Amino acid sequence: MNLPLVVNFDALINNPDLISWEKHNTLGRSGARISTLFQCDKTDQKISIVHCQPGAKADCHIHDGHETFLILDGSFMDDFGTYSKGDFVIYEPGSKHAWSSDEGALICAIWGGKTRSP
Image (cartoon, rainbow, N blue to C red):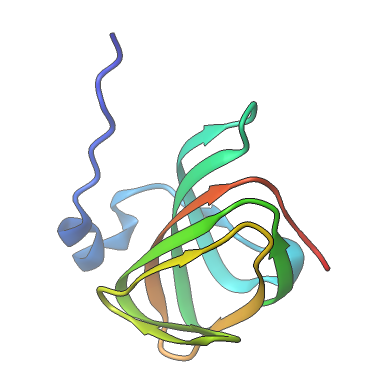
């Protein structure tokens, strides 16, 4: 039996470099990095932490499956509103949006399905 992966969000908020990061620059994203915690290619499920630098942004994109995210720190805005620390946001499959983060943000994101350009 495999041991569970445990991530302490409080520790991560205070020191984001506790985990390894990759650039998150597909689909017109800039100023963000990503750490994938879980990915299943068969079902297109993915759980990641996204770290947005101040001024980070992404072009408009479509989520073929659901997108769910929890703002751990900072704030994040998209076409539908501004989300702050503690906000838990759920989008249905087929959602479309662009996003930005003026102050920067740390986000736990869960996706089901592919993400693509409109």
